[in-house]
Length: 431
Image (cartoon, rainbow, N blue to C red; front, top):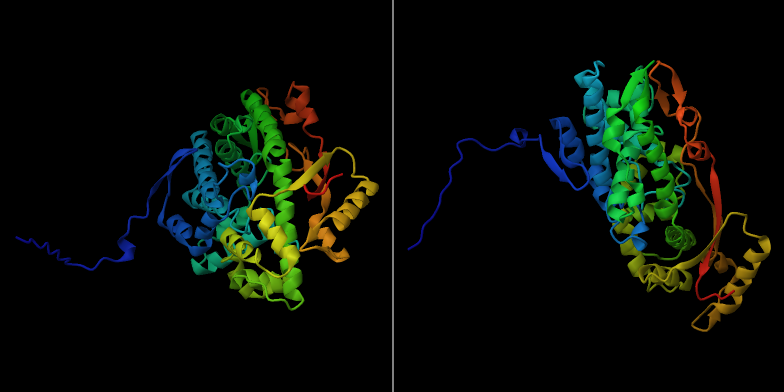
């Protein structure tokens, strides 16, 4: 015996009837709330969904296998912390309108939407020194047109044009919701416990004085822990020597692919990637030629990895070998030093590569050697006591820079910019 279930809808279902107030379960913060339909629609936009396909920490998973979280995760987490912060400030009798509340959430949600494939790794390779903040602004302006001007206030906050300046501090400063989220999130996914911070307590200690964000004096030890955690995360995660190695290898691989394309060679690439390999795109060109923005909004980690897999069989030995090394984790050796790498050592490595590296019995040509040799400098500044100070509100009403207010000498030490110089080359080259 067969039974048939017939369902009759008296009214057609329209997307406009969809419940857009959603709750998302986040492994770091717990349940996150999407507050209204506009934010839901922004999150569902293809430009934002692209962030699902961009690793938050680029190639750091080569060091910490758990570091596979995305810019999408981070953006939602930062938005959640912004809502917690604004609710805290409202609870301290600071007037924040619903319009301001929504705009601040949108601004922090979109603060990283301009990141390219592999986050920071290719910022100066795919593009000609175009900061991701500039692209974020261009995308926000595009979305503002698409959403009928509803992002105008968020853009003012993002660019620090809004009259209430503390909103911009919560979006972009040395104690913003961006850093609050990424330190917790990156610590969680890498397993580096030294990066843990007391974000909830710090947020509860925030106040507003003279239209500036300050921290109540009893929160100073949480700030000290925050700055120490940031310094440790930079050396242990963001500037880990293996991360430096893999990023340099990726940069050299893209450089070689671009060189070949611009010299008439056929190199596989998706349409979005091909456009940026063929053309040197700077900020003015990005602003005037809309096709570059559309292409950039389709470009993600998958474009790069898909291309690298096929480049392993390319007839150009440099592109092929670099691609194979990346895919198989045959990484460059990295030498880190507090002093500049001596010119003699650079020349020695150069000559070793020239004399010892052979592919199909042939040595590298002079112009090909530098694709296997990288050197430069990395810097770590946990706290810059400049225009965007972290200010402590003393019990007597006095406001001091945290470096002055702290009774721990290491906070003053954190204001120093630490530099390390690196030299990367294949492990097959013996010095």
